[in-house]
Length: 148
Image 1 (cartoon, rainbow, N blue to C red):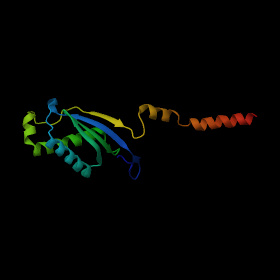
Image 2: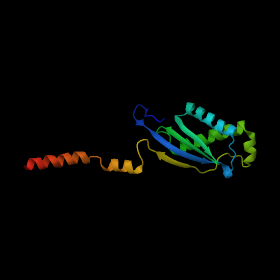
Image 3: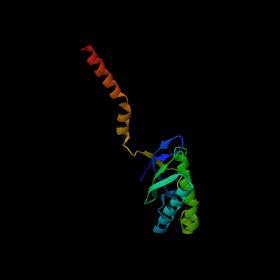
Image 4: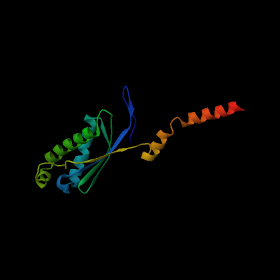
């Protein structure tokens, strides 16, 4: 579950849905490789301020739901995750490296999307749009009362 991360000058709850495809769209994730990926993510969490909320493998894609701090850009998070996982998988599962003849575990591209703990784009858009409206409404009511 996500939580507020409190630092000396900010409080944040930044959630990202990241999808990383395997190189050549080859399905090479077995149960053992899946276990290695999840264990490696636990190690990443200990070394970096990247918290893995969910990890799922689907065909040739790996989905991550992560929470991090504002100092890390989405690109930094993705490159950190992809780099460490690929080294660990190749180290522990040399058969995967043979299946991916180019020597890379991940495809160059990825998908990343911000996830909101409190609502989707429409909910947040309306919330922002209505900021200050209650105060304006009270001011209008006050002026109307003064007229009587």
